[in-house]
Length: 187
Image (cartoon, rainbow, N blue to C red; front, side, top):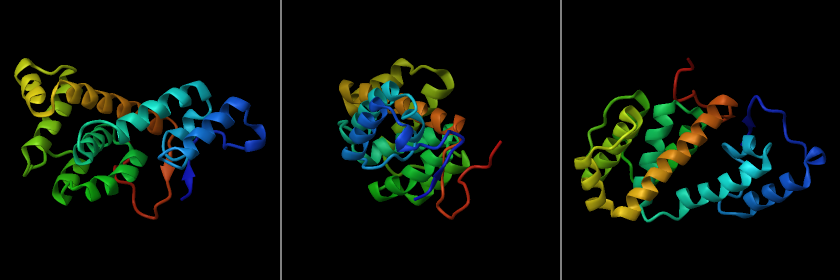
């Protein structure tokens, strides 16, 4: 799939050894491609190296069900109106079990109607975290009861990591050529 950005295109002949090493790790890992923010981060191989390891954990290794982590990612993509982040994760979220009505409500910026309490809790946590920059005691206790303390720590990591991803994609105007309209209107 063709990916465009405002960055200088990568040319292997001009890459340094650190970039080649990180590129090799990314391509041989669970992602297998230089999609999304890695297109930008590879320009700073030290950042790319650390970020790709954190990202692999947040995406593939947390104790949260894929359905819930993908909901947190989609919430973040919608919050930041990150075109490529949404394009990458919307089909994954759908396949993981997030309903079409929830996905569409998130994309429009509307509060979804959730059939599942754990999904509603992810939404409430994301809303509080992004709007108030805090989680009150009652919501925190509900989250710990539902996901466990380590699960809440990992969920906050997912929200934070994917906010970094969204900012990266937005600043460098990373776009996937999917042949469909962008999910969000450009400001």
